Amino acid sequence: MASKRSQTDLAPDWTGPRIAHADAVERLTARRGAAGVTDLPRNAGKNRTASKKALLAAIEKSGGRW
Image (cartoon, rainbow, N blue to C red; front, side, top):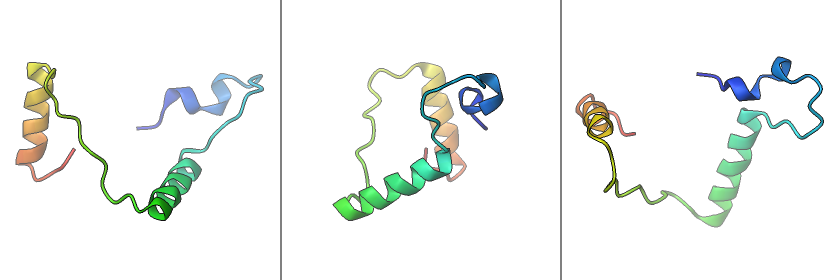
């Protein structure tokens, strides 16, 4: 799903920087590789709502990793 906030036609007079998502991902991946970061710590999830817990359980059950 594309971010509505990043669409250029919503603010044609914006003078600030625009960052393409693909470019940002590429730079971040390169920086993590150079730093030797292979896996980031996950959120412990102690304050999750019941609906969020159910969603994550369904994702895990289907074989996914959120």
